[in-house]
Image (cartoon, rainbow over all chains, first blue to last red; front, top):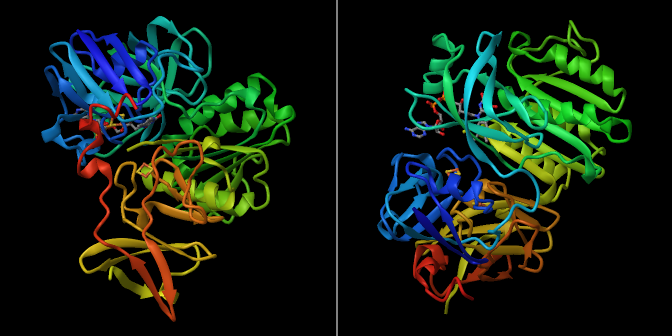
Length: 348
Length: 124
Ligand SMILES: Cc1cc2nc3c(=O)[nH]c(=O)nc-3n(C[C@H](O)[C@H](O)[C@H](O)COP(=O)(O)OP(=O)(O)OC[C@H]3O[C@@H](n4cnc5c(N)ncnc54)[C@H](O)[C@@H]3O)c2cc1C
Ligand code: FES
Ligand code: FES
């Protein structure tokens, strides 16, 4: 099927495979369609279908709440077409080619190396049948038979042209993908992968100091960023400040990995773990004395530690939406960071 | 006369936003230090309620939903993300009162004569 796309920055045409969303089809042709979550929650990918037969799969998607359905508005990440279609996107920033980064693609994957990190956090690899290159901080969508709709997960590892993507997932009570992952034997299970996606990316050539504020599994993409930075000795001449929020000491994960990063990077990298529900009275992690401990919400810990240190900084934020909003406020009001230097993913 | 009293000027703290309803018309008042701005209560991007999503820092209003920004001193767009102007009602202070000139409620294009329906829109 052919999609004709009208935007404020010009008209584009691209092919859409049967069953493929108009968002995925556009992105894999290198068209910079607007999106954030790629999974129906944020509403950023809205478009208007002017002609053609289009069906929005997930009618109750939270991102669809403010759509004008009677006018043909729908979410591109949830919509498939059954004929050629003419659609409009009211953005001035749609380009026909990615200015930077990797054009996403579909591939197949199989789960391997599942490892439970805490009672409700699981790490696993997805071995993919076509090598993928991605930027540190990006995510893919994973779709598995029996769970309706794809889910977005950020890569923890950082490698080029790799056949292995590593993820860390925090169990969400009653969540369909969570239940499947935690309650069944998923080793070897096959899934459909689409990516890489997302703009919360780290590019060493920007030559900025970095601050990462992550809540729970929001640390995922930041692990990839720190991994890349360490691989390239970035902390030799740039500072890195990582703030990782969890509830209690027993909810901590990646402590050994983070400690190892601090050892490799030297004094320019600091990692603070903020415990929201436990006051240990300790200044450092009981098992890793190069990881600082703080009590309270992670954005508060960042605010306390960062006063006067926001020089030449790019900020990364990921985690549950209220945590992300609070951290964005710290970066804007206290850090005075401009939007171009703030990159975030809301795990809604 | 469409000058309407919105509130007492001292009821909106420095660098904060507060929502009011004047003759059935919802508005948000922003105190940015050098003065006040009065505008419709929703973000021109995706209708986020600005009294919750808005943040004022250094005379710049940011909608923290997607980081669109407007300079409250100049009323112009700021930052790299912003694609639409904010609608500002004229405002003046009389004694302790803050007044805004509101002929009728301003509705952004996405709500009424929709820009997406305008055939010239995408060519302009
Ligand atoms: C950019 C991004 C990156 C993320 N990275 C991570 C990460 O690294 N680690 C992590 O743990 N979490 C991450 N998340 C959150 C993750 O995508 C899931 O929302 C979370 O794991 C809960 O999934 P669930 O299936 O258990 O819960 P559920 O409540 O069953 O589903 C949650 C999400 O699945 C989608 N969904 C639900 N029902 C449908 C349906 N009928 N049709 C279509 N879609 C549906 C929606 O997006 C919904 O928000 C990320 C989210 C985003 C947006
Ligand atoms: S990108 Fe489609 S709703 Fe978020
Ligand atoms: S809704 Fe305000 S910036 Fe998007």
